[in-house]
Amino acid sequence: MDSKVPTPQEIAAFLARRVIGQAEAITELSIALAKRLGHLPVGNVLMIGASGTGKTTLMRAVEDYLAEATAFGALRPIVVRLHANVLGEEAEQGRPGDALLLRLLERAREVLGATTPVETLLEHARRGLVFVDEIDKIRTHVTDQVNTAGIRAQEALLTVMENEAIPFTLPAWAGGTLHVVDSSGLLFVCAGAFEGLYDAVYDRVTIGRDQGSLKPVSMMVDGELVQRIDFSLRDWLRHDDLFDYGIGPQFLARFDAVVLLNNLGVEALEQVFLEAADSGYQQAKAYFESRNTQLSLSEAAIRRIAREAAKSPRLGARALREVFRRVIRGYEFEPERFADADRVIRIDVPDVDKALKR
Image (cartoon, rainbow, N blue to C red; front, side, top):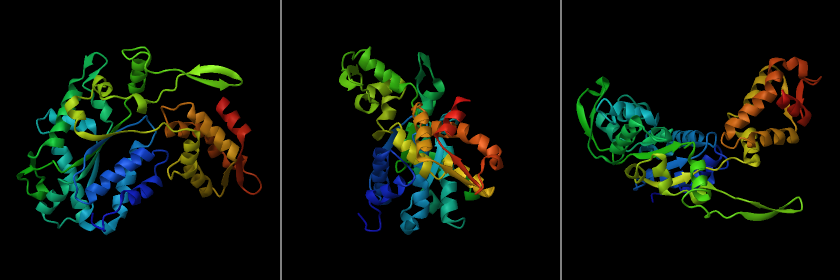
């Protein structure tokens, strides 16, 4: 590999500063990105994770990495993000790929400059990095009902993923002519929460066709021997589960890697709370500083907030934001009332408990 191309470890180190508690997903994306930057073959990636686990944050971190890593020059891929349903909507109009290729072309123009020849822009666009969000929303069926829009969207995305000849009408600024674009060089990273998948797999191994596969584990709790079922979706997820969910076999076959993101535990939530640039805590600190006031939370108060958020594992960092909002809104409304003589607002566990009881 060219010495100018960053290693997966270098890329992962950057992403880990933005994304907390998702080492496997960071590793997989770092490898894929290193291959792409080195112009090597690379497979598409499917990420499955509950709301608030960091899927979108990871996508944005990759965008930021590529934007900051100016040393790549021509190696840097063009990046776009879109919702999965966009491809379904344009498939109904008979032109799957138009919206995606247009976004890639326009993004290439933004990055490379308006005077760049159209052929150069097209070359960069066809080797772009495409993040597709909420991929689970294009299921082929929901319960027992056929989801026609989802079927069309999967077919449209599959067409772009594997086709070497996509007809594409250039925008007016690029001449407006019809081009045939080889889209086989695009790298797709698709992500979704897949609501209900956890419960479906759990039911399969406990009361369904694989009943008895998951054995209870004996452990001591408060001096008593109890039996608990220790279930992890990562250990039990099979391709058939995704087929049953509504992801078509042909579509799933286009992904070389299926990555499950972890639900965030108390320690990870604490780290997100304190370190994430867009966390509610960082935003509150900036707000109080604008009012010439400082915010001070005790370590115990932070742990209490994280524990409360951890009670909603399906919401991840979003639960953390909601819990902290309940705690901080009164202080933000009247900072002067709560600040001490040094203009510091100090929050401890009793303050958190009082807020959460309201």
